[in-house]
Image (cartoon, rainbow, N blue to C red; front, side, top):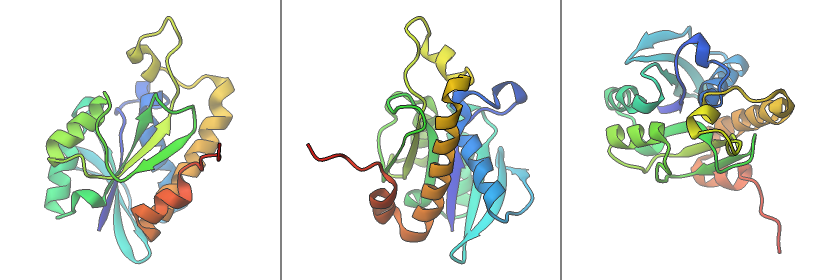
Length: 191
């Protein structure tokens, strides 16, 4: 069994914010795949899909971003899922809007949701699926930036990015993290 967790904040007022890109990707996976009805458990909304005959839990923690680990840690222990089988999708300001980057592990890099996951999982050794949201405008704080919706002129990149991320997550579930990184990470141009 694997867990695919999208990070975000519950509630209508946060639905379209950059910080909720994890929830948006999870919803896009659920829209594409046959899934069980959503239920609330472990302080999360949970649904199940099948990928290559394996059960995969789709998880949207309802604990708010900074406490995401309070949901994910107990959930993975209950289902006896190893950290390397917990795929985490979240927003990243260091990537251009709509770009994705897959890593087998990594530090929190200042992301409070990932800090919480690391604290409650007990390791940083879980796959990171980072979705670019770009840097804040010069007069904006980080909080202003992540809690604002994407501007209209970026929506094409965001929608393409969500489709790319859905393909990357489902593909990586089939082929494993190493092949997934080779297939779905953006290729570097030779210098």
